[in-house]
Image 1 (cartoon, rainbow, N blue to C red):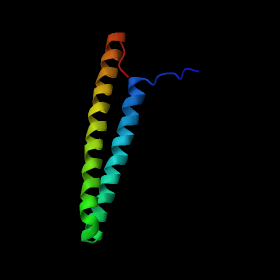
Image 2: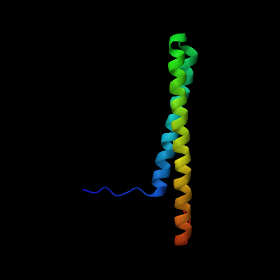
Image 3: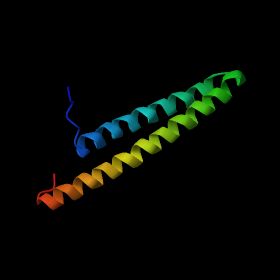
Length: 80
């Protein structure tokens, strides 16, 4: 069974939600780095960096999808 493809607007919203969650994860790693001992500091820094990279990636693609959605709506004659 074929699942319907999400619209660009839905995909943009999903990516924005994922970016928000990665930002929360980044904050958690910052707290772990501050509260944990030296043995966890490096791991927390690594987790923070990974979360930041994914948040940036999700944000970038969400913007692309939203801009494409707006362009499609403009071509159809009605922006959402």
